[in-house]
Amino acid sequence: MLTLKLLREQPDFVIERLAVKNFDAKEIVDSILKIDEQRRATQTELDANLAKQNAAAKTIGGFVKEGKKDEAEKAKQEVAQLKAHSDELQKNLDDLNKQQLDQLVLLPNLPCKDVPAGKDANDNVVVKMGGKIPELPADAKPHWELAKSLNIIDFDLGVKLTGAGFPVYIGKGSKIQRALISFFLDRNTKDGYTEVQPPLVVNEASAFATGQLPDKSEQMYYVGLDKFYMIPTAEVPVTNIYRDCIVAKKDFPIKMTAYTQCFRREAGSYGKDVRGLNRLHQFDKVEIVQLSLPDVSYKALDGMVEHVEKLVQELELPYRIVRLCGGDMSFTSAITYDFEVFSAAQKRWLEVSSVSNFETYQANRMKLRFKDDDGKIKLAHTLNGSSLALPRILAALIENNQTPDGKIKIPKALQEFTGFDIIG
Image 1 (cartoon, helix red, strand yellow):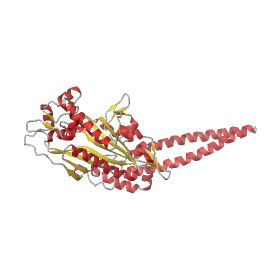
Image 2 (cartoon, rainbow, N blue to C red; image 1 turned 90 degrees about the horizontal axis):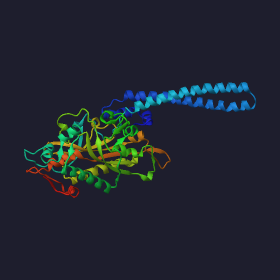
Image 3 (cartoon, rainbow, N blue to C red; image 1 turned 180 degrees about the horizontal axis):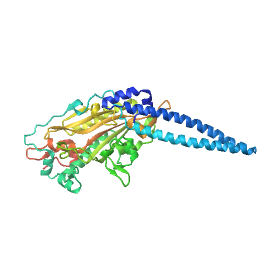
Image 4 (tube, helix red, strand yellow; image 1 turned 180 degrees about the vertical axis):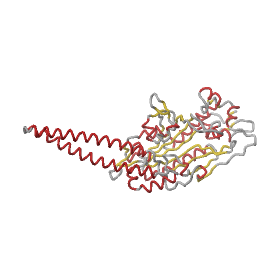
């Protein structure tokens, strides 16, 4: 979340930058600053009252020792009155702190200066394109038809077992899933990322720290009995490894990667965009996370974008890199680059990765800090990216590599992990 220091010192700047995300922040910012004035005044009054309370308490023993019972009793009554007032002030302060936090979490992260203005995906900016779009015959099949004919993914069985959006992978379909996971993890660890295997469920504190709560509460699966949330991405547990930590400056950058299954309700998703693997409630994804010093976090972001680009290139998929406009960005991101691969049979671009810098937004929520050379404790920067999300990668691989006789060729880089070069 945004810091109070920033809101106090540059409220107009905050309002101006959030307008790039099409977010009118004036009312909330004014409310936070008003509460902050009341909170600081209450804190000052409480501190003064506690000082009087402590001073009065110290006199009681002296009066008792000197045999001054009346003075001692009067001092006790004064302390009792001061304590009652301190308790009342502390309760007011707690209420104001809660009110302020409730307002603070309603403010999105500020978009950085490189984020273009815009309302939705139509205003995103394509910064790079690569690969060659394959020319398929007019009767080329979409991946859900190919998967059915080759018996590698059963969507109907998933509906029977659970519901729509929970496919069952079979035979070589399962093998290529495992191959993609191994391929991504292998390339990530070779690039210096430490592999971790986190839980698939997190507590409320973890979901709050990375910004899923309260903003995305309706998109998450909730395990009510235990008050746990099924993770929508490995970003949540992996970044939270360093929640409430002061990290030594010499230990940066911290680079982690994880494979997890991800769970998203995807409420409100309908139509052609949800066919086959295009939008699932449960899916596999490999994530990369970096914790960075502030002055080099954008260099780290560039490195993460280059890394994901190499993965897509190795898979021989046509791709484009898109810088998201303010209106299409997530609540928590300062800047995001999406990777999209072209699905030749569907004739559309499919998002397969988002690489983002959150600057101090998540770090402030989770109290992830470092001690700088000047001795001051400062907030670190957090970054993450999909490296990569499997469903749409697999969809594009199946469609783009289909042969006239209905088989699927496996890209060379993946063959050492699959153990076969063709399906069918």
